[in-house]
Image (cartoon, rainbow, N blue to C red; front, side, top):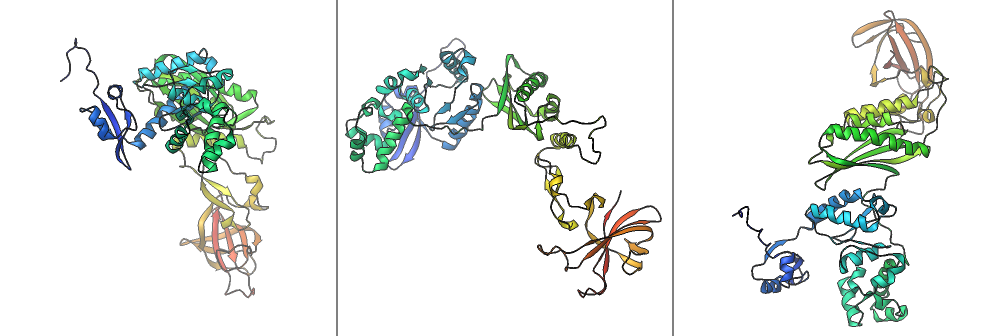
Length: 500
């Protein structure tokens, strides 16, 4: 039954999480009430029940714990863009260049502790020059310790050997040698230590962890998410509860990010908007551009049609805009009417159009024709999913293809020729049960089969013609085969495309 308003809150019951092992159930985590009764992680569950008869237990869910830890780490990007998952219960944060934004290292740890406490999460925090030292301090010492470079060896000296993240078998063996503190390894002869282990690899594992903690060997972090090339953030004095506030924040972030990109002469292909909510969750939205861009108006247009996907929830505390996939942006000289050469496409305008269509319809919905280096029309292009990159038409252009129709039929369709001129275009033909009388024709454009790839039909040459009927309709037709070529029967006629 719930307590009355004036009653003190009930004390939590002893509770543990268990996991099956080779020797039965073992305790993997215990709450403070259970620890007060002598129940610790690693104890057999039968022994734990003997120490605490009313002990409550649930099996541990490692997958759910991993997902929750990753979600927590993503929320902790509010303090640094570079985070990695340590062990099953740890988040490693690269705070280089970030602590001064929060008033120093101690103030940064205090802010972390306060935010996590408000979320109902207990934590142990430490800051050190190396990931290994920070992990050891957080797991084996009092909370919120800041260790400087000059104090690194002294700060780790008295810590238990478990702070080096060694296996249980290795820790047991070290205890047999009388080695229980990290500092005892400082002056020990490394060759003598290697001789005490059953293998050279086991001894090397101890020395590697020691050197990583002391900064003698590099320990690169494996970030859970790639670090952005550029990023700007906006702390909110009051939590944003409506989408209008998110739009207003983005209106401030986009120009600030573009100013930074322009200082480097760069643009970006991908942009990520992250909204850090008050309930320790993160809403994010990613958009892409066909070419590197640094125009605030273009970035705002990319987000405009998707911004309603950001749910403010109980309020947003921080907005962050990140840029990925940067590239050089060079200004191009243009005439008053666009390009100086009117035949050249405006790739910038095409990129803007492609980005707006993708932002409106969604990713992997738009398809685009990809040019291929082939004279054969069926092989000269392929329909592919547009993934933010426009094809380079110039590099794959085939001479003589500019007079072809912009769109071809899915496959050539047969024509019934009524009046045929040898080695010339037909005078009349039937297509889809309709008779067309040719008024004028241009051609032929002769294409020989590409011997280096299998042809779609028996290898016969084609003569292509542009013909116009009496009603002004223009067709692209071809005759497959030549009279007397010795490669089958008489030539056949097909229509391959329509001109606008």
